[in-house]
Amino acid sequence: MKRVIVIGAGASGLMAAYAAAARGNDVLVLERNEKAGKKIYITGKGRCNVTNAVAAEDFFPNVVHNPRFLKSCIHQFPPERLMRFLEEGGLRLKTERGNRVFPASDKASDVTKCLERYCKNAGVAFAFCERVLKIDVLQSTMFRITTDKRALEAEAVIVCTGGISYPATGSTGDGYAFARGLGLRVGPLRPALCGIECPGCEPLQGLSLKNVALTASRRDGRRIASFFGEMLFTHFGVSGPIVLSMSSLLNEADLADVRLSIDLKPALDDATLDKRLLREFDRYKNRQIAHVLEELLPKRMIASVLEQADIPPVLPVHSVSKGQRAALLRALKGYALTPRSLRPVEESIVTAGGIDVKEIDPKTMQSKKYEGLAFCGELLDVDAFTGGFNLQIAFATGFAAGNAI
View 1 (cartoon, helix red, strand yellow):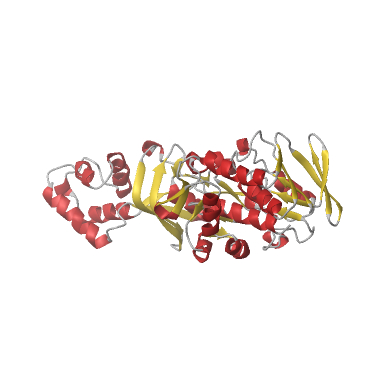
View 2: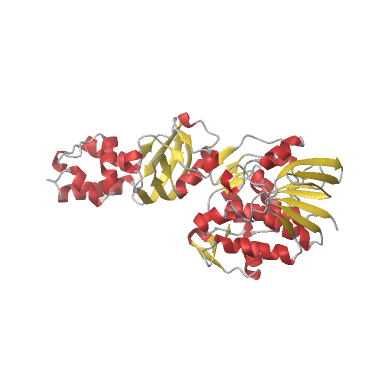
């Protein structure tokens, strides 16, 4: 039996603590907040999208950075196993659109309670309102943990302090500082799954678009990526599911070289949409074009689309030239946005970048430099798209770390 200290009582920390205790170890969790799972409470808008019900092999295309590093732990603890684990712990689950898995109660707090039950039944001890200040290596298999209240020694330490997103939940970058202090490489930290600032969107603030396609391309026309689904105009630019996913692919890009466009009618190809326009124009030939477009677009978007097509909104339909119709078609199939920056990392759902995965054993999450010292979850340079994938990474890396002790 080893003395194990887990730093952080979030998703990866709770799973690591349980897995280590289930192996017969003496486990203490140190948490700077007054309760466990503070960030879990706000995930999925308070509903907690715990995982995505895909097979392990289908998981990896949804990982943006370093999917190969995760192969071992995801195969060891795939979504199916996590779901079974939670349900056997008394948490009923449901699967919604996009294979997103939520607690049936729609309460994120029930996820935390389930994990806490597992931990307490396995004999895990908790110390809340206690912040770790430093980790020292005493010898090859012994560590000293200095907190704001005391000093402790342990044969194994699992660091699960989260990134720097949503610092109000306690994620203020402590784990990166511990890693740097012990000589591990920590890459630049970047926002992932966040809004994108685009000037000129203020008049559309609050407008939600469904079933649209968002595409990012470079100035030379090379496509970066395209996502289909929902998005939202905000006071700073755009947000919503497909924007969040896009941001994770743009956080290392020079946004001055990036163009965003929205296909407002992705179900129709250019020829079909042009025929639709001709039908509407023939039907309402004496109306102003702005009124005719109410058949095709949300009212609040019409003026902006016409502006991009350089067509006066009061122009009668019978006066629309072939060239103007072609310009309108381009605006409908490629409404242009100019990205200025991503929102700050503190507002992002997850933190990209972090501890270089070359420093970590992918089977055990232990540092290759210090046996018995592991890092999990958001601290690592791995991140994924929305849909429960990031929480699955947290649970799987936590399980791998705890189970290896």
